Amino acid sequence: MERRPRILVAEDEPQHAEHLARSLKSLGMEVVGPVASVADGLKLVRVDPAIDGAVLDVMLGREDVFPLADALIGHNLPLLFTIGEDVLAIPRSYARIPRCGKPATPDSLADVLGSLLEA
Image (tube, rainbow, N blue to C red; front, top):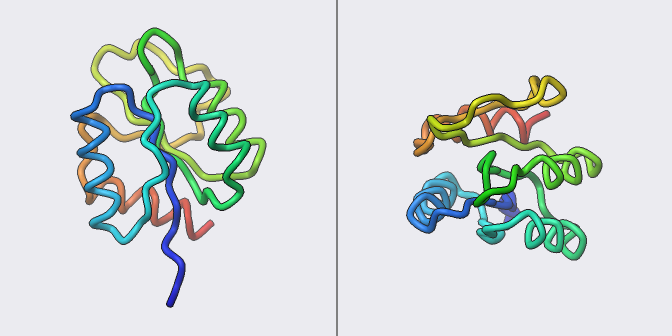
């Protein structure tokens, strides 16, 4: 049996987190989390070496997700940002990170994650 890709979900809004989890599972992926804070995401990255990628909401409560993104990038893991209408700017250093609007559809996740996980 082939191992399903394990995707960390960082999303602080329960409804969006559940939607992402369902969408990822429908694509044959295993969901890690979801987590609602950068600290919880960083803990998972440290203790779970089998994470294959991540879907990160740019804003988790009042904190930006960039420290978690940096940790994932440091582990050479693919990721994408989900963004709401209220996001003003993403720093230039993250310009190459793919993005999906919220709520992300299974099709948009498949398009982005499929190419990320193949890389």
